[in-house]
Image (cartoon, rainbow, N blue to C red):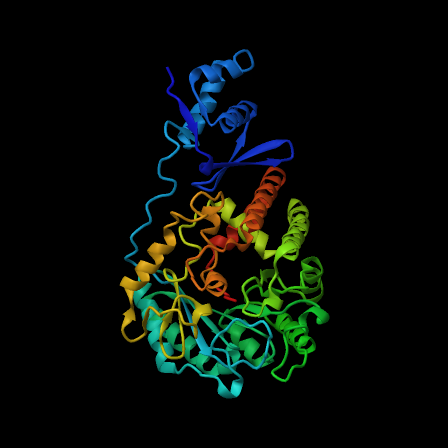
Length: 484
């Protein structure tokens, strides 16, 4: 006699893909096709919440064979979608974090920037004349810290950030020389990357970046009218003409690695379809990522309400184009969807929203260790410095608190293992608490993941080779870190 079984709603979600029902197994982020019997059994548990053997026999006797029904029930038990107790632990006990196997250090090489973008979040940003530049001694100690804490890693990643990092190119060159020399001795390799506004690019420094295989991301917001709304010189003039000219020169000369664009989406500037077409087809970027502003201290930049929903709708429109191209074996360079498909394809499961504090730390010009590059200059406590090392007790306490979702909306959320609460800095800016979940667009993110599941299954069904061509090679190669 079968014991009473209860439905565990926080472990399962289904998505309709054409005529197919796809089961999203929330604890593992795995995807499973439901056949007719499996879908019917799942729906009955979801409808009733609690079932005994009599209930199941009454519903399905004469419709399906007993063996098929038993197999379907057992599959749900094995996945812990049904069980004798629906009140058991929802998520694993948060891990005790003792090791910090750094792979990436972000060097804030200059707080000065030659632009005056109106929406900039950097709290330590200054003009070039007032910029606080990092010195080589601090940078050298940062690299040594990375090599020490990431001793088990074969490859380390060094990211140069600002302000505008190219305003301190001499330091960047010193760091590259030092890191390459140290890695040669230790039998490791070093990966370098930077995010730039492109205005200071020259043929000579592009050739230098090319020779050292930098991962490069350019901050650009679209065609002239869109870009020049906010990406201005310190004197208030638009920068599109200069940025587009310099970027075209970069793309003509640079061949070491694909170059991506990073677009900041602000209120009134949400036409990502037009932006994408311009940046991919007219400028020539390999990929473009879109970051919506929702927690800026100046409310006029923030997307909210209907406009935020329309932005996500526009992302889905761009995503449809991505899927249609993928069915033909082409990658349109829409990195937001590409990353989601990578997570689904590889079964990625997040305990923390990102690698900040575990795989990545950011160093400010004073040598203090920040959770990530977004927090340099903020009021958030730092977690050690390049002289004394990582403050592991305090950093561990922070990360353990971040991994503990109990009592939050994340605890039972169906995308909890893909989102994990959202960006620490966005929470800090919006709620003054880096551990506060980013509730302002949870529903939209859940809908976006559903769209991603639909896109993933459509591509997997009709052109599975796309993942071998465009997803797996990228993840198997060395990582590129271009922060924004």
